[in-house]
Image (cartoon, rainbow, N blue to C red; front, top):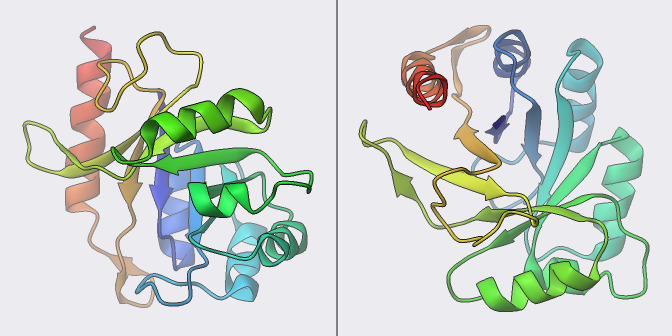
Length: 188
């Protein structure tokens, strides 16, 4: 099981995720999103964090803009929606975590069959676990009976906390959710 922390906007959250053993740190490069981070700020965070792989998240983005940020920051992968993925038609793409929802699931799975760079799928749809904490799951394309909320997802997305003050975060909800999933996995 892989853990990914989304919408990282500060070094404190990124260092916490690395210390907690998260596999992926994701930056949101959608300018109209409340957790947008400027590429140069993400670059500074990447310099100070070792361990996790870095992912750039984009929705309805221009393929060349995505590639420019990917190359500039030396990211490990991109997380993109289906329309953005389709805009890469004649361009060699980096590794893709493809965001799907219930409306475009079948089209997205078909797209992934023919695009060797899609390494996993992410669900926009929220799942509430017993702690009532909304999470997104992501899945390997090779899982049998792939579906949202499969009992054995490839990974879980967590949403980063924003700083209360510089260097100070409230990690209570993240800690509870992380421990819930770790204990659930250990009891399998």
